[in-house]
Structure formats: C-alpha cells, structure tokens
Image (cartoon, rainbow, N blue to C red; front, side, top):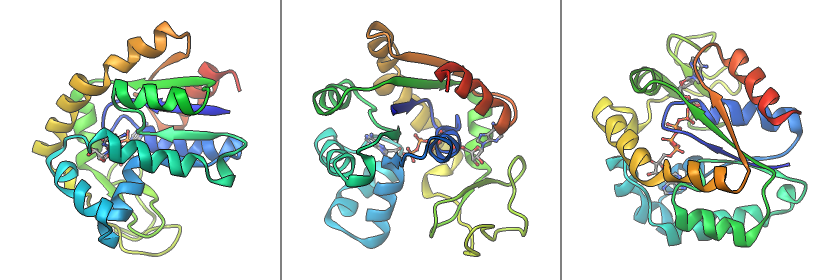
Length: 209
Ligand code: AP5
C-alpha cells in the first residue's frame, strides 16, 4: 500500500506509522527523521534545514521534495510505503501526485492542548529513532532506549513555544491538504485521542486492512 499520514505535531503520526509499517511490511518514510539525521551529520541539506526546524517552520519545498523523491525511489519502497510528515504543502502534494499514485491518506486529529502535552513529554532515541513519552509510553529504564540501549534525548523543537509555532504552521500550511485529499476521495479521518493501541485499531478500521 502507498499511504500518507497527515496531522498536527504530536498527534501520533510517527507512532502509528511505525506500527502500521511493521504490520504491512512496508517502510515508514519520515521526512522529520531524515532531516534530523542530516542535521546531526552536518550535511549541506542539514545546514540549510536546521534554522527552519528549530523555529518550528517548514523547510523549503524544493529541498524536501527532492529528498523525498530520492527516498521513494529506493528499492524497499517498490512494494509500498508510509509517508509520515510529507506532504505538508499543496506544492509537495502536487509533486507527490506526479511521482506516484496513493491508496489512502490518514489524517489524525485531536485537541490542541493534548498535542502540546504529547510533544513536550516526548523522548526520542537519537540512534534507532524509537519514540517514547515520559508519562504515556515510558521506556523500561528511565531515559534509556528499550531497543538499542542509547540515552534518550528531548527534541530541540519540543519546547512549548516552538510546539505552538509548529501547530500554527500546520494550521496555515498543511491543514488545506485535508480538503485536497477529501476532494480526491483518499481521506480517512481518525481521532487520535486514547491509548496507542486504541488509535491503531481505528487506523486499521479506517483503512480496512
Ligand atoms: P516532524 O518530525 O515530522 O514533526 P511533526 O510533524 O511536527 O510531528 P511530530 O514528530 O512532532 O509528532 P507525531 O505526530 O509524529 O507524534 P509522535 O508519534 O511522535 O517534523 C519536524 C520538522 O521537520 C518540521 O517542523 C519541519 O521543520 C521539518 N519538516 C518535516 N517534514 C517536512 C516537510 N514535508 N516539509 C517541510 N518541512 C518539514 O507522538 C508524540 C508523542 O506522543 C510521543 O512521545 C508518543 O510516545 C506520544 N503518543 C503518541 N500516541 C499516543 C497516544 N495515543 N497516547 C499517548 N501518547 C501518545
């Protein structure tokens, strides 16, 4: 299947996309993770992207489109993929449409104050990119990744003021994609509140898989 996960910061796109990728046996392609890897490796792309990411705004379309196109063409994505965090603008959606057909677009929605709690409590593994939350999804040992044993970190853009800017950026630049995909008959709307496994059942139900 070729799927997209849309939704505001902290809604659980990465968490649900990772579970679904495992269930379907296709790669999860997170543009946020690819960009953060480039920042930490100090690549040219990472240097150009860092300022936008730290401020909670979008990295320019041309950079993100080229990066995603390259990733989608890799052999593991031939049988399908789940895009997590792309597209985020109409220009990105048009570029994706010229590259590949999609089977469905899942959009996660929930109350803004909950989004802030989820983002500010998030911990991530800098090595294997596993996701945790200090209250709702803690690692077995505090601040240590269950999967690879690395020390967990707080994302630079998970400060409350930056999270609020990211939510505003989502409303202004990305929310118009809800209508874009509804008009094309691809949209599946899923409420993102409740336990991770409850949301996952809703996602499976919405996709009928
Ligand atoms: P990106 O990394 O994509 O961030 P985001 O879209 O803001 O989304 P998040 O990763 O914050 O949240 P999520 O919805 O994945 O939630 P998660 O599953 O982690 O992008 C970062 C930046 O990169 C952007 O701001 C931009 O600058 C740039 N960028 C990326 N893509 C771009 C593009 N296409 N164009 C331009 N710029 C781009 O969950 C959040 C927390 O909640 C976790 O702690 C998790 O454990 C917990 N949680 C999840 N589900 C539940 C649940 N059901 N109950 C309780 N806790 C839960």
